[in-house]
Length: 306
Image (cartoon, rainbow, N blue to C red; front, top):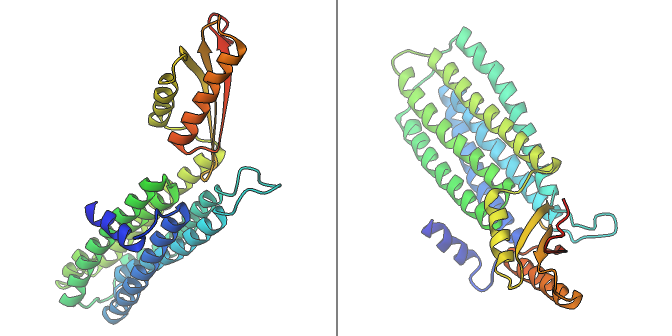
């Protein structure tokens, strides 16, 4: 974590990076790293006639494609609000996540067919100790990429970057499995290559399905997490004059958050004083939670609406 924070400071030494900056950084680190891994894995796979290694190479290539989708999502999602989209374009990031999931499932289906054929009709696979060492290195490198993506994703609360991180992590696991599989083929267990190919496919499919669920939940209107609601409660109750709060609603547009809630105040307060308390609640929530709009309804004590 300390290394990731240091790296982020090196990329943006003189300013606080924006949401778009962080999204672009994650995408380009992923693209360059995965292009390198794809080329080396694919060449090893062809030379050794290993379907699991070729499958893992395309797993890395799918990471490149998903990172391009991430770039597109953050570029379009950062567009300002307009007449047709008054709350901005932030949800395009989640549409990008859906595209990533579909790409993964397509790749999984195609590689799954090939892996089954290899199990039914095993083919000789050569073993190269250099390829085994590289696959172990690939696993470690991809795990670092996953942690870097999670670090950046948590920093800006981005499902898209977290999703990309799990894609990296599945590739890390797959790389280690393929490296182990290459050792088995040294002793003539060629069908292991197809089985491990299916293992990689299972990882691809699992990640794809999880991404579909995550993006769909957000677009449908996922409820905010309990920690976020708890932060709202703490901030609102810290305002002098607020007795309680209820009916909290959060509309998340990724780049914009809109909060509405009811607060209870003493019934004897003047309209001016109650309004001042409501304005203070709005101001604190905007500053603390970086939300664009807060709507506060005032309930005099004893007259709460059910």
